[in-house]
Length: 292
Image 1 (tube, one colour):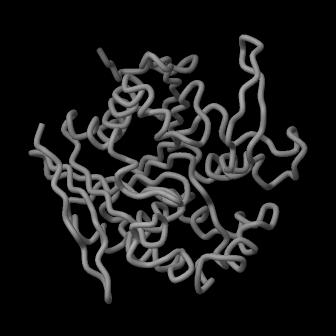
Image 2 (cartoon, rainbow, N blue to C red):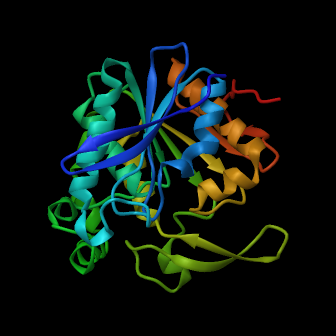
């Protein structure tokens, strides 16, 4: 495996750090992190992908950590999209797949739409889905929160229309405790359940974080029907990368499934990945990914 390569990408008046995970293959994946995070958060998965021959590039979006050259209230979702598109430009014609987690999922859909002639696989991990009004807000803050807080407001996202016509493969990665129906946990349908307590199969209580509305997953599944693959991580909530750090076998198994999907010509499939890395196909769907 080739070591990762830290780089900086310049913007108007500031620079953002990124990491390139090169391989011998020309095909590459752009990875986009979520809110209150940076590109290093993605390292467990990107290192596993690189070891399996998939090259990756991940950059930090402005505003989401104390190390950012711009504070959160001086950047915006639209600026973060501009940054993600610049990261994609860095890969040029080698860009073949886009991965996005949470807020990064909303951006990944926009990047894939802009480069749909090249992108053949779109991987959405616990994806946010925002109304178009959120991209028009000048800066993160109360106005942005208001724009994304209306129940079912995400149905105004143009990304759903893009997904319905995208002819590539869509992979939805989700923790089994993300996308919980808010109305079953004292909340409002069309919004997130948030921090809730659930019962495990063994009867023990568990505090989980579920910020993605159940209906977002439903809307994405409906829009990508016929091209949607689903990978569910057992005993995981929205904090997917905490889970991958705690369970390296799961990170390796997830990378193997994603690599398979980026090469697949088979019908869409569904898997569950246990904390020991065991990949369990859903009934009636074969699973070719194998992890020692």
